[in-house]
Every structure is written in C-alpha cells, then in structure tokens.
Amino acid sequence: MVAVLIVSARNDWSADQVAGHLAARGVSYGWLDPADFPRRLGLVAGFDRSWAVELTTAEGRIDLAGVASVFYRRPGDFDMPAGMSGPELRFARAQARVGLGGVLAALPARWVNHPSSLADAEYKPRQLALAAAAGLGTPRTLVTNDPAAVRAFAGQVGAVVVKPLAQPIVHEAGTYTPVWTRLLSRPDLDHLAGVEVTAHLFQEWIDKQYEVRLTAVGDRLFPVAIRAGSDAAKVDWRSDYDALTYEVVDCPEEIASAVRRYLAASGLRYAAFDFVVDPDGEWIFLECNGAGQWGWLAEECRLPIAEAIADELIGAAGDR
Amino acid sequence: MSDPFMPSFRRFPRDLWPAPGSDEPPSEMRPFILRGARLGGVQAGHGVPEAKHRTPKTQTPHRSQTTSDGKDGPRTVPDVHYTPDD
Image (cartoon, rainbow over all chains, first blue to last red; front, side):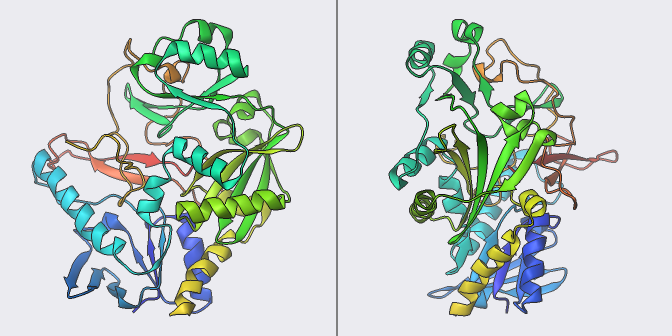
C-alpha cells in the first residue's frame, strides 16, 4: 500500500521534486499518470460500501486502500488504443474520464488539490469575488461583450487592461498565438470591434512598484517580488521571463490572513496568488491559480516549496 | 452536447486545449482581445514561453495522432503540443 498518490505526467519536474522529499522521509508513494491509461495502466475498482481500487502499472500494483493524500498536479491525457472511430474515441475518453477519474475523486484522502476544487478555481470572476470576501484589495473589473460598456468603464477608471478569461493561447494558422494582458490605447477604445463576439475581461490598470507571486501551501506562504525590466513584462510578466528579477519579500499579516481565508473558502491547499504592490505599498489581488507553477521561483530564491508540499501530504499520512 | 458553463481545464484528466495543428487563419470576427496578439508568437511544438528552470522544463507534452479519424497509418507520426505551467 502507498500513503501518498501522485497524479501527474511522468516528466513533471515539480511532482518529481515532491516525490524526492517523500522518498527521503521514507513515505511510500505511488505515481499515476493517466497518460498510461488504458494501454499501460490497469484499473480494477470494486465497490461494497466503499471503493477498493487497485492499479497495475509497468512498475507493479498500486493498492490505494492506504492512500491518505493525493498530490494532483498535471496529469497527462489518456492514451487510447488506435483503431477506434472518432466518435468511439470521444466516447471511450469520456468513459475513462468518469471511470478512472471518478474512483480517484472518491478517495477519502487529503487532496493537494482536488480536481473539482481546481475546476471551480478556474473562474476568474469567482476568484475576484472570493478575494474581496476574504478581505483582499481587488481591481475594478468589467466582464462584458458590450463595447459601450467598455468605454464607460474606461471613462470611470482611467487606464484599462484586457486580460484573457480562459487559457491564454490560440492554436491557429498552423501555429500558436499566446494571449497576454494588454493595456488599451486610445485607438483601441475608439475601435472595439470584436468585443461583441464573446465575453471579455477589462480591468483598471494599477500602477505598480512590483508584482508578487505568493505561493501558498497549507499555512505556509512564500511571497516573491517580481520586478519587470521590459515594457512587455511591466504589463504581463509572463510575456518576458528574461526581463524579470526576483526577491523574497515579507507578506503583510493582513494579506496572509486573507490568503488563508481564500484558501479555506476555495477548498485549495496549494495555490499561486498574483498581486500588484502599488506605489503606496498596498497589495492588490489579481488572480489565484490553483495549479500555478512554483518550481522556477523555488530555484531562483531557494524556497523550500517542494518540502512544504511534501509536509502537507505527509501531514495527512501521519494522521492515519 | 457539452455543458457550456462547466469548467473543464482542470478536471481529470487535464483537458487538452483545442487540437493542435489547425490551419485556420484568423477571421474577420476575431475577438477583440486577440487584436495585436502575435500570430505565431510561439512555434508549434515549442509551447508558450515559460520561466527558465535550471533543471528540465516543466511544460507537459501531449502526444496525439495526426490523423483526424484517430487511426494509425503507416506514416502516422505523433504530433506534440504543450500545455504551459502558468
């Protein structure tokens, strides 16, 4: 039996770091990559008042009866056998999703994080509401498909950015188009064609001293200032990693308390929070990513984030 | 028909983004936010820009068949696209 189940792709650097800390502390863990299912992963799950789940991988069998915690990170997609028609393939994927995903989701374990909580956490409008309820400062925001509402909003708040609501990439024209946060210009406001075709998120521009990526693991917080050295990175630091510098900073206690309230309300045990620190030193919440990246900051600033995640997982195992 | 409001990206397993390799060019109905987004800002197969790790990259590759019917052929090769760590 294993005490911790890691659900992620085989080549996941971050999960591998956590696994190393689990192993160093003598905690047994199993690694499940859904990309092995069904061709290289066998599933036998029986229900009699509770689920008994056994997985068979190339490395052997994983009995999930003793799993006290699950580290759910970046699972690969199923690798379905060739030969099915397109409709059959889609049906088979749905079967796998609800079958394997369902028995995993039913595990009475501590999840870091549960996929349902992660899914709920996707909604940026909900993130803003949770943040405000938790006591965090938030930027004035407009979600609309009405160009007139955008102009009125800009007249009210001044400079405005437009941000992607969902995944920031488009696969098109045989290539990939990344979509970054963009500061609207005067010509943009005069010509808002395309707003009407779908929902858009507009937000007041907050002047920045710097931004903060605050990685939260249970009660432990790892705040890192991110300073941008290019015009592009000053608007969206993800667009120009080469222009960034990092520094561990102190987190104001009221922000730490609010972040913990946010985590409790959202059911997340791990999350990456993004803040703007304005010229007055106020921390303004931008967004929260329940599956945000942390590895590069752990390396840049020598932060024990992998250890903290292992602690969070082991804490549940120790409670058993 | 799928539920249009159901968040899906994080649900098990992580949903793939729209299938890679679409040759469709931008349309005249392009959403406003995509205005100015650099077409081809990322080369196919290389994923979106990411933080530089001193250790191997953290992006997750997804291999999929290039045939639309999902069947292998003698010249079928896996197509790879990446979901970023964000």
